[in-house]
Length: 127
Image (cartoon, rainbow, N blue to C red; front, side):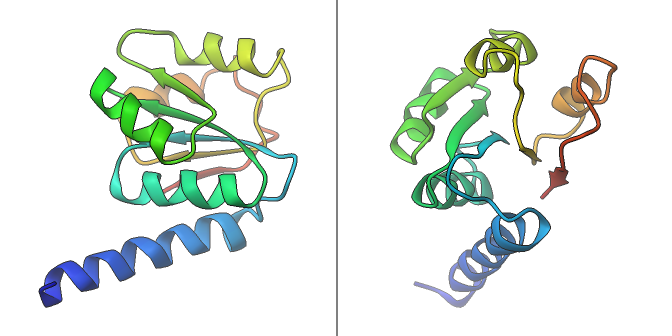
C-alpha cells in the first residue's frame, strides 16, 4: 500500500470514529441514516454502527452501490435517485425517524432533510 492510500484510510477511519463516538455516540437500539453508504466514510460508518448494535439505513445513488452497502452492514438500503428516501425512512421506522443522520452527499439530500418534514430534534452530521 502506498503512503497516500494509507493516509486516506487512516483519515476516513478517524472521521468515522469522531462521527459515531463523539459527534453522536451511537449505541445499541439507535437507528442511523447514512447517506453515501457505499462511499469511503459511509462504508465505515455502516460497519461500525452495525457492530455497535444500531439499525443502519443507508442511501446510495445506484443499485450497484446498494449491493456494497448491504455487504457493509446496512439493514435497509435506499437508492435515493429512484425512491423518496424521506418516505422510505418513515416507512422503515414506522414514522419514528432516526436518531442521527450522516450526510456526505450534500445538496441532493441536504435540501430535503432541512424542510419542515424533518424534525430538528435529531443530530445531523456532515462528513
